[in-house]
Image (cartoon, rainbow over all chains, first blue to last red; front, top):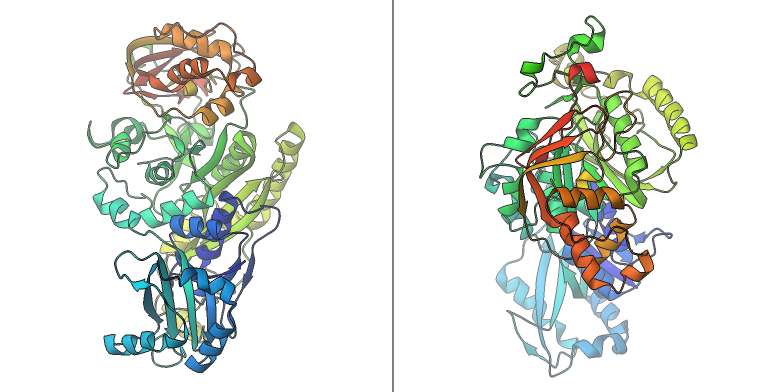
Amino acid sequence: MWFLCVFYHRLLDFRKPEVEALAELFGEEDESPLQWRLPEHHHNDTPFHFVHLSSEEIAQNIAKRSLLVKGMYELWGEGASYEELKDSIERFPDSRKLPFLASDSTFRISVETFGKALTFDEQRERIDSFTYVPFKGKVNLKNPDHNFFLMEMDESEENNGLQPILQRRIFFGREVGFADRKLLPTFQLKSRTYLGPTAMDAEMAFLMANQAKAASGKLVYDPFVGTGSILVSAARFGAMTMGADIDIRVVRDGRGPDCNVWSNFKQYGLPTPVALLRMDNNLPPWRSGLKEIFDAIICDPPYGVRAGGRKSGGRKILKGTVDPYTVPEDKRTDHIPSTGAYSLVECVHDLLHLAARMLVMKGRLVFFFPVLRDENGSEVKFPEHPCFKLVAVSEQILSSRYSRVLLTMVKVEPYSEVIEEAARLMHLEFRENHLKWLEEGNIHSSVFKPSDTSEIRTDSKSFKDPKPKYRGKYV
Amino acid sequence: MRLIVHNMLTCNIKGVINKFPLRIEAEKVIKKEVDFNPDFLRHMLAKIEWKALVDGARSMGYTELPDHAPDTERVESDESFLKKFHHALLELHLEEGSLVCQETGRKFPVDKGVPNMVLREDEV
């Protein structure tokens, strides 16, 4: 069945992957990718898409859980004008219409617009024009059995600040499911008791949990847990969570007994993580033979722009200027071992290795990867691993200099020694050819380097931004 | 720290051979109720090192677990076993104590329920 999927006009790159992940979660066959279709003359960035799903129930579940789907609708008719709309609705089979128009049911018609506004009277006028639809039921505005939806939009060139992404089109349909964005005010970071400088904002954290297909009975792991902002969202969707961090002050102490990672879960009445531990991802303490234990790994690795990664061994030890030293017996209890910088390259390598071994088959690895926004538009290469298939790439632009890309990978091959060797070679190649600029410190300096004004003046005209801006903003 | 995690951890000091399981030295054990999820438990049962779990539970004062894990097929119907397994795996918390490597005697402290598995400079 085809459904009209109406999105919020934000985080454009994240919208379809979210629906695809949720479709799989709610029982759509994962072998065949979802079919999408655009309304006539619409650009891919339009909020209106048609998606093919095998049942109304799946559409409803997706809409309910999604953050970026405004609603899913069974389309009864569409057209460029109200005359065309009428013809189209009349052609829609009665067998599909009549069950929802019965006299013992209640209904409501909502009028929505995109890129324009209608006064109350104009809305009323449009609703009144539906005399050709045989509504037999009673109107109920608060809690109707069936919700109908009329969506009108204008040519986007017309003074509404939008790129030409759509053409005037009118849709009429029956609502199948709608999004519950009430989660967001509840979980917004400013209400969170324990926060760190890189806590993931609630909407993005939920999107990540959706990409990971977090659900009841699953175990989700975040190796860079920090204040737990990502795991909170996974726990909200019913998953068991587990987190690790190298900073013991964050995972163990927080800011006191009522302001720590645990309290961030209790605050929302969510089950606390199965475990929090302090460990070094570079030297993980997993027992040999342990594998395929996590259903998903979700994280925002430290890539050295706002916070850098750390691993065991002091700066001097890692450089080789001093030999590892033995801590005297009497100072051992409170000794805090020194740590050194942990470059993104190593960090991603360790992450892929961890995921290859510890994820169940079809388990998902979801993580952010930084990308410098290159004026030359050269293609970015992402880390690869023979155990994984990359299924979604969603860019969130953070500044004119850089963005971060949410990568979703699915484990398609079991882990083995042979695969590990292949992965090592892949990593070396990747490091050599694509990651030089990401090496320690470089990304930070590229993001924060003062701009060369002379260069900008000459370049600004020729610089073609591959992503369009909407109302002066990237969405 | 719950036993599910204890079951995953070893002492990763270079060159240590006999590193699993870590012996639990319990100073403070607390119990927290967790929602019972049979599917999750069945999934975990296949991944768990049973003996380490039994010994771990005993050192935290819980002795109800059988010496041998029942067959995965039989577990389906055995609610009373699953309840015990659930309790040992998820509800027992080591709040304060240590995990001790059997070979080297290295103690990994568990403080406020968080095990500290990071090694010192001379152990890396």
